[in-house]
Image (cartoon, rainbow over all chains, first blue to last red; front, top):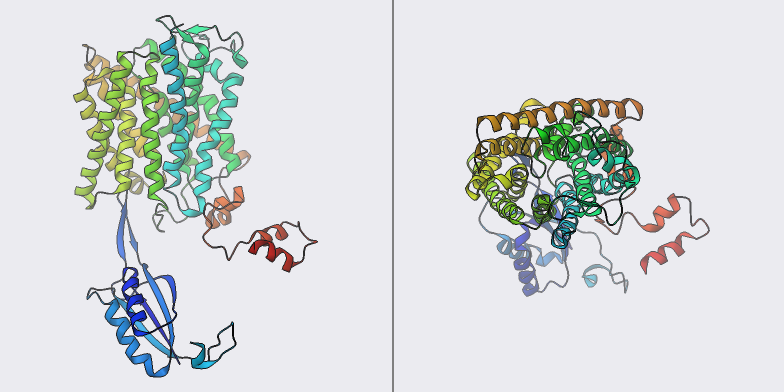
Length: 112
Length: 428
């Protein structure tokens, strides 16, 4: 199994969710996150005082998939998340040893 | 008794009362999350403290018969002694003293609350409460007497201060500066980002202030008449103009029309029209508004250059706006009053209040500081004065962390309940 993690622009969430559903993903976890990449942050002005805000709001989407689906699923997420502008985010995958469905105790790919 | 005037003044008093919570929201939205409640209550507590003092001796000191020299009222009306429902004040058949005293009380409540913005995030709550009590006693009650009591020395000098440019705004603005110089800067001033945590709250506060200010300004006519109507009209014009003035300056200087700028500009306009609105025509009001908006927008940057941490710009908005309104009315006053001699009188009014208030406020802040300590500990300031002084936080960001059961067991109660039972209670 693989854990696919995507840290992307918040407003792309709906597109990504729909694309994942179309692909056949049954569950995912979404967290509000903040961070920056090459685009760095932005500047805000309050009564003339300028603040550089390094951390930009992002969402972090996590999906567990079977090994065979991982590459294809990454492509799906990347396509749905892309706006072509700086700050689109990152997607990565890591191997996962095991997964358990809490209710039934099923393990491995059966738990997905 | 004039029924229409009485009704108008009573309603105006209620409008002015709403300005203090409005101010609390205006300031509260501008601070960081960790001190939002403290900022709210620093204003709100004034409704308690000053109401009490007003009955005890405040009304008497401000509006009692003059003790001589136009400096202070006597103690004849302590506890509102000698005043009953039939006692009247003012011309045109008069209004009950109770209505007048209530209306004036709301001004006394608002004025010290205005200063709280300068001291955001970093003072002990007890110290602030003591400072308010001392400040209204030594500074506000006498200055209100100078400006509005018929024997007050600035009143007799014919200084125009219709609704409180000197007694309220210059007074609070310079008092705030003095207190800031005693208390010092916030930890991280000019270094850490100190962004407003809720601009919607700021706009809500500005809207409540704007609404209440019709009572503050028009109500100061103390009669439902043409002066009140003109004042209300000019209040609207100057406030709108000041909002635009601030935004235009800001757009040119900093590149954006900000929400905070719109709210701040409106307040700057309200401040500047306060002393002047009953004595200028609508074009005068327009001019006063634009000038105040743009000038205050510039003035709020002074604290960074000069290095005093007037956190929410009480000096930049209330002192500067108050001075602009107080001086400009000397020039723009209609009915043949405006001119060099009136301008001179206005300057005497503005600078005498500034001088007295600065010195007295500095001494009072120093007294508070050396006796009980004005400033919160570094630890409390860094972790947030809301938790330190009020044992509350403004927003519950997460149901996971601070469970009620955890709190109560930390406080030493509920010891007989097992942890499991407590958790169960929480889950319901």
